[in-house]
Image (cartoon, rainbow, N blue to C red):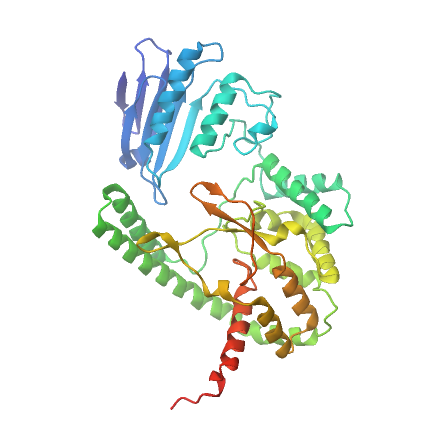
Length: 440
């Protein structure tokens, strides 16, 4: 039985049996988003779902009230079969959220890793818990339990927990072991604190016109997602292109004005540091850390830039000491050699992928060109170190592949890649004699 109630401020979507409190799910929708509701369906009293239009993406929210642990297996199976069918109907580009009461206990067993965190009050998983873990794995979702929010779960709390975690872990001499130490500390602390995000201030360059163009792009995208019409797709692409171009121009103007006065000074300071055996100073390292961009995808280790930047002095100091050890020994943690590649489809042919020029660079020729340019030998050795024995895993629709060896090209996503490509290109131009060609 499905019912819909409304007052001046809220709308109640209600699904359940006539008997009050018996197998009921409901959505109470505030007035601010009532006009954003695209679709609602009550499968039965135990499962209902709602589709909400959002600026960034459309959200499908499924509300459930699962049978209790002591219910008959037949009733449980029927419930999860229905839930699976509802999940299969969710549009591919929608954000999926499954909320409600699963009457489940999720334990601390290793088998739950990947679908649930370690912070749970239960030691073992019950039958309902095992079913929800299977459901999470099938729908590529992550289980998050309800708990009371702590008042100090902020960046300061993350720093505090990180300091406590590192105090219990002695610094290792071997860089592989030390990196393993730091990685585990970062991930454990992030899970404990849950990385509560604080609202970022709007960038200075982001003005009202930027906001209008972004809104127009989002509206065009939502229209295309609803209709699937080719004309709407082309309109969305055009709006996206306009918004991206305008925002980049605004940001570039601000960045140029802010940095123009400091660039010459930076060049002079770099010229003073010409001892190739000197590792970068801690101050130089902190400057680079401050420049790391946020909201970027993490690599295979799942450590985002934010987790490093907000880790506090103790974490930053130990990461710096690893980098100094890498500089001095010209070796790096083995885990750093593995990257994650995401193929980009070529337009019109799903079996073909973009192949960048970066992929075809001969590494030996690159090193020779660096030597001819009289680049410091230390920097050449370190650059070669980052490319030697490099590996990658490829993300596909079926999951992530095993590691493969990468013997050509520069590393994707590496900050050095563009510079190294330009060096290789300069060498190719000179080898072809094009640097001596005079244009008339």
